[in-house]
Image (cartoon, rainbow, N blue to C red; front, top):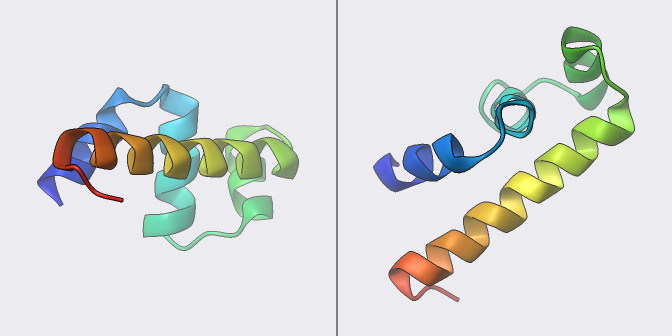
Amino acid sequence: LTLLLSLLDELPPKCRAAFVSYKLEGLEYREIAARMGITESMVRKYVIKAVAYCAARFEELQGWE
């Protein structure tokens, strides 16, 4: 969990906020979009970017596949 939190800190602020809102707070894309003033499509892109980034960094740091 500490590693994940550290990796999330490496993300751009909007990307991190979208990911946290979706994965940790359980909000839907439309709720996040309204809260952040962006489109649902952009929220989806931020979440996908965050997941891909964290997966790549986990693999890099831990040798995970």
